[in-house]
Image (tube, rainbow, N blue to C red; front, side):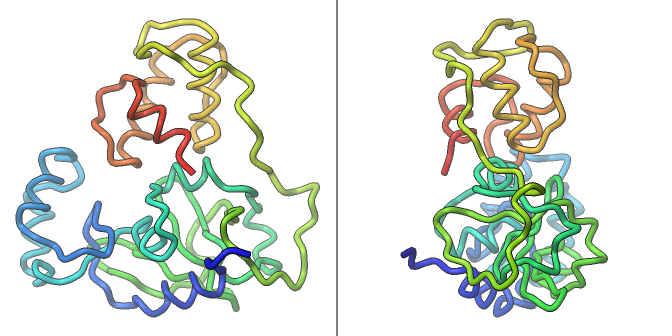
Length: 241
């Protein structure tokens, strides 16, 4: 049995209501140096105005968190939203939410939260909100995610024929650094992993513009350098569990 439980994750997330939000924060004290590093890495997200707002809201010097950080602080699995989708043992369609166990991770592209039961979700919603409790039916969520390393208390199982389960990548992992213009079976490995991370691609072995766009989005979600190259660090993040 795991020491991690769905109820434990839900209790943890709900208990963090009111915690300020800052992009990239993982339940850590926000500092000026951290803000500057995030600005340098993600200038289109952590803008000068974004940092100024955090200062105005007196978030510097306080514990801050982002959406995936609300989950990783409890699980100690440092996974971004795309990685959580990729590494989920099972993906439950949002239409089945009334059958979900407490502690299921709710997901839509670029954002995650925690199902608390009774139609409620705890989510680190953004810098204007912080950690809030919201209605699941108002969140544009797409899936509920469960993980093999979390124990859940299930009262009404979701029908297995509507669940998507994780399967092994059938393609050979690259040994070279992949970038736009590359072709081959190892590109199919990358494309398969990106599809598993929630991005829409054709697995054709051709590293074109769509594959590049998906890779950049994944690197951003995983807090990697956004260089459009699939080298050892990006492969490790794609395989992270």
